[in-house]
Length: 245
Image (cartoon, rainbow, N blue to C red; front, side, top):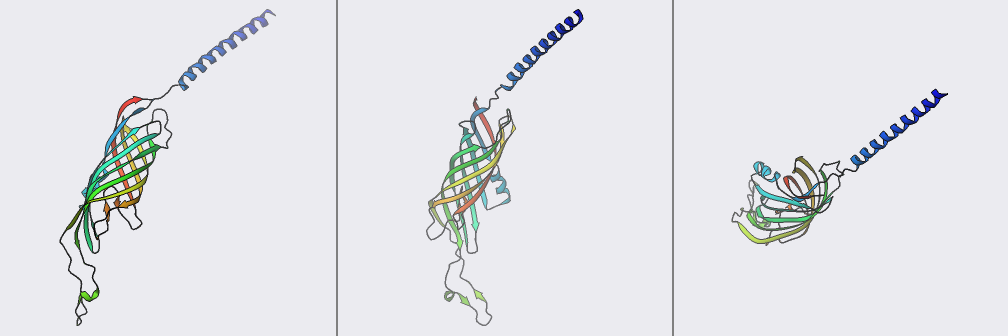
């Protein structure tokens, strides 16, 4: 009988000890689970490297753009891009060059749920864009009636009007537009980020050169007949951390 009593006592001691260990493990795990990972808040600045790369392969284009954003809360950023572009557009009957400065202002929303201390983004954004530029009509073929052209009746050869090569420049042109932005951003090194974004642009207004339609607006890119356009950016940025939250 004494043996059974001793066995039961030892069992209670074992169970109580096991329960205490379980409580300790639970408290430790709770502390681990309650660990808060803070992320940097600050000003992020960088450049769009796609523009100088494009200029190396396209002699009719040159451009430079500085990008920046500031984190307001966990998923919301105010953003801006400032740049300069020059583009020569060659059409069947015209050759023109547009050059000037632009600014885009708006916001980005991060739709990606980061793990622990990760700092990546799926970007959904909006911008308002404004461009101030000049346009030069380098050359053009006058649009005249066939009666003013020369036709050799014997051979049937047609001689069109002469090309006008006297440049005509008009300054003070401008364009306003809005755009929707989507993209991806990843932190490659501590506070260094690579970002790729694409945008769909809708032209709100444009001041054209007299007697000639604007074909390209800096910051907007090529203007199609539907008054829409597309763009992309590939940027390298660095975050200047001000605080952690």
